Image (cartoon, rainbow, N blue to C red):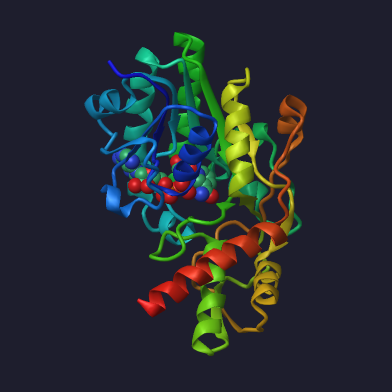
Length: 325
Ligand code: NAD
């Protein structure tokens, strides 16, 4: 049987694709797996063994993780607010991936990483723009984001019990709004940073300097740049702690401030229309980073100004190339 240092599930997606790159850069042997056909993967790394497979059944999950030392599960049917508010059943069905991959990893892998989300946190702590940063224990008593958040909370809880009952070496990070180059930027699954970068880039290219924003623009968020997310995944996976850890930036911005920042980068000002009927999520969310600092002496530190400039440049470039094509 062929063996691999790492198997990454969801490798055709945004974070999974970057994770495969970083593992390869460290000299690791990697198998990359995603349900999408290979030609639709955002990043295809020739040094990895890449395979297209739906890992939501136990049989396919076993095949996918066979021979793996570390299993990184980033596979999920997910997207930004526009997707998760309207696809609750589809989001919850990711429980089949989480369950079967964890079962398969338990049988053979030395370590299992699970990508949870800030959506596990209770809505009542996120109803004000005067934000209270979320601590890990705030997830209980449970009242997470409907659909997507329940699946994440259940699956991370399952990791805990697999660790406690079966000795499976599970590790869990709660990602907070990850963005960056090669993230989904159109099609309905994109998140706010990519969506706003695209709208601004479209305005630059078309010369029509107006666009609509979801909500009143005063919603507060923290956004985590992809390089920080990848570094955090490695620290948490390699570390000794099995309870969930926030992996998010603690730098907060409103959607209006984020838009202004992107406009400054692009050198334009948009006439903003606020769409109050669009999905807008919670009013305010931020990551409390005391735990990650205490355990790993590190926290995400790429400023939104730096990360969004790179992201905007990438999306602008994609749009220009498509225009030429
Ligand atoms: P993504 O949509 O780009 O990647 C997920 C990948 O999983 C996709 O390529 C998809 O095709 C694949 N997938 C879905 N169902 C599958 C199946 N049955 N078998 C195999 N592959 C399957 O999303 P992402 O932003 O890279 O997120 C990765 C993980 O991080 C997900 O679990 C997500 O819920 C979690 N997360 C992401 C964020 C964020 O801001 N991006 C925030 C919180 C949590």
